Length: 154
Image (cartoon, rainbow, N blue to C red; front, side):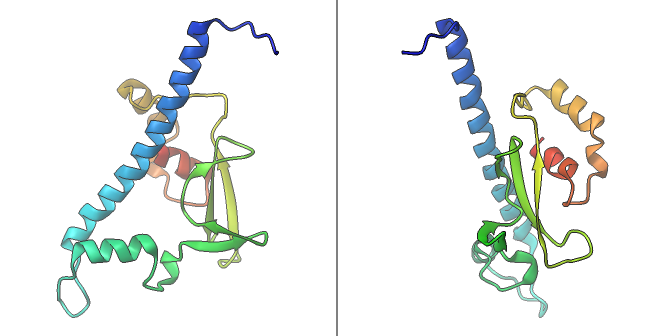
């Protein structure tokens, strides 16, 4: 049996931080979907008719409409990956696969970001404000950068 020098309280704190991180990640996904649904409430077709927001939301989320910008999956090094979706990383804390970076717009690129050792505490307004100011999140528009995805997580 492996002996550790951690007290029960330290172990409890580490587990609590990990659970909070996972809950924050789930909340982010839920917020993104809620924001998308709210944005679709005022959508209109080219002919002026108003589509059902729920149906439009489902089509966009599932990527069934066939629009090139809404393709939910692509190939990266021979395997299928979801595009523009943040997930746990292997090299860094998070990774995301994006399409359309650089000269070859059809190529899929993997963006790694975040420090595995650091905890995100975006629920603290002072930390959130400081992070967003330090990284100039209001100017982060290029989805091909780690800064864009890191700011989006905050």
